[in-house]
Length: 400
Ligand code: AMP
Ligand code: MG
Image (cartoon, rainbow, N blue to C red; front, side, top):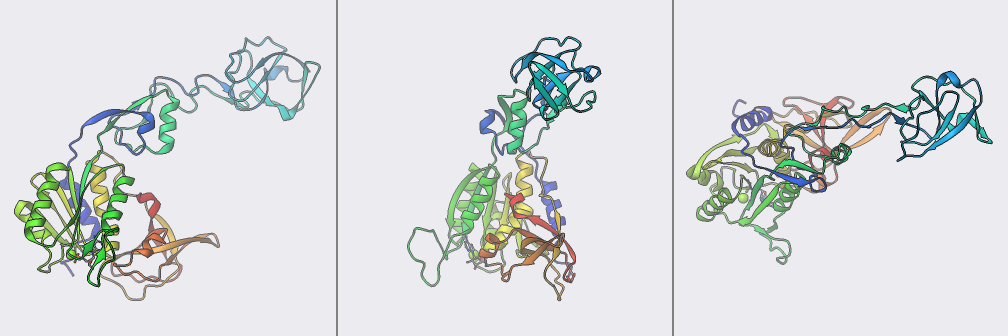
């Protein structure tokens, strides 16, 4: 049916609509994990800075290796050796610079040393066991580009070129609010029959912290127009972006849509996505707003597919979407669905393939199956699945 909007189309509209407005700061490297680079980092040095030994062994000239050689110097890592005279060898250790005059390192397991004389028991090739200068990074090259979200090895890479501080964007400030008269906070006593604990707040806060964004938490917002409008106004005032959960269906208790329309503009979409059909996107004044559905798993899925790429774009990151991998379906889908389904699956490696087993309970209200899954398996609209069919998957760990 044409009233359902495809996930990719909705994401395209959202990404096409928002533009980052970013401020930069300089932070010490150890505080830069997860932050987004505000400019290219160019190396002013070669790494390694000199040809150096990849092994513990003997540095020598290959032409000399037919004869036993006197070992005339010892070069541990951290020491610069002397030029090597023809017909001699140097004891050398991993990471130590190759002395001029040597053109290979023979590993110690292939040598015999006695009384200061080394015999080479193998044939050596020029360049063997030498890590050439600039092998990792060439001076003047871009090591990491603007828009890169810094991962743990990136910090090591930046350290390897002597970078002590990096220029990054200020963390995006994201306001979250949980709408619903039925919600109570964990710690606020036992829920009565009509109440549920507010879990979306914690899922969203965790997802945003994982993206190294600043969370402005407006807590629970009751289901009435005045409270909704006041929370939305406050959120848009203090944050760069507002994310709400609940209250975007079409029932008369769903106030978010109407109040955002009053304060700005809004599209309410029925997404061709399961779980998570209703989704609102708009602006409160100039502040982007995403209204996620209320069901805990719908919140998780729509956040990951729509809100996350949008927030990453607003944060200045140039990588918006998580990579898709593939796995074999260890389940069947006999009845096609008009909506693209994101099934919670566990992964297992078996018979040379990665198999995705669907979690027994895929209800949008069931959060435990998200916690106990490894990935979301994507079943396109109007498609059946047979056991062994190849499906695209999104690893959950790649979304955090
Ligand atoms: P709504 O979209 O507001 O109609 O909510 C849909 C379903 O999600 C209802 O069963 C709500 O009780 C539930 N729900 C909404 N918000 C939350 C929340 N913050 N934590 C847990 N469940 C919620
Ligand atoms: Mg509600």
